[in-house]
Length: 267
Image (cartoon, rainbow, N blue to C red; front, side, top):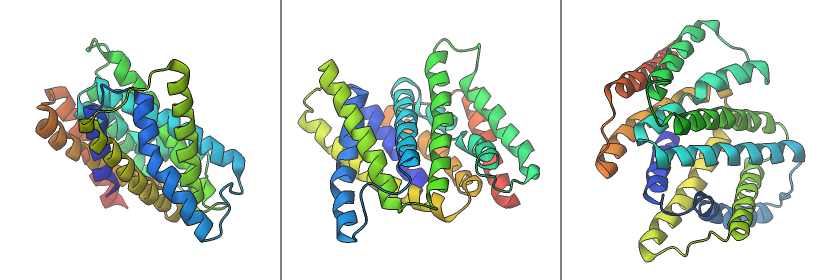
């Protein structure tokens, strides 16, 4: 479900690329900013949480990762952007061992290296003129991996809805401030309203499932299931944007998917 919704968000962001990225981020956080505080109040849980420093860190890292990912969705073929985003497990595998001290299976190391080589085939360093969006997408993937690691850490101190609320308000308020400062807000037309509303609702469901999942299971195990986003991206890229990935991207995506499947079999 998370993989499907992640690919759908990428499609919606790409369709809205004529709007400022900060405006898309602001609109996508509105449903969470409205609904989650009401639920927290009803179940009598404080909005401010317990581990405030890590809640803020999760919000900031999540915002940076999301901003870089959205930029890559609007500037790159959807398959390439999603393939680079799906390198996330490689970095989560490293960070979960280094930062969370989760037990790692070194039998997985060759498979994660295989996935990383697949990512290099998609990025094509030295072979593509538009290397900057690919590099930004890679940094966004690393930042998002760190954000997911904080979710696993916060399971010990805070309710998953509190974590969602922090992320939504950090992202929503920051994006609104940037829009007001730059005076770059564009009044969305009628054709943009439905995608903007939909992206907010999809993000609400995505954040709920993602946050809950990382609280319930080891980060390096959950991350393996994100590889299927590439398949959805290939299908959506062709259906909505008539994008056909080049041969190197197909091989790279195949390497990443294969490594994810072998990791699943290993587990």
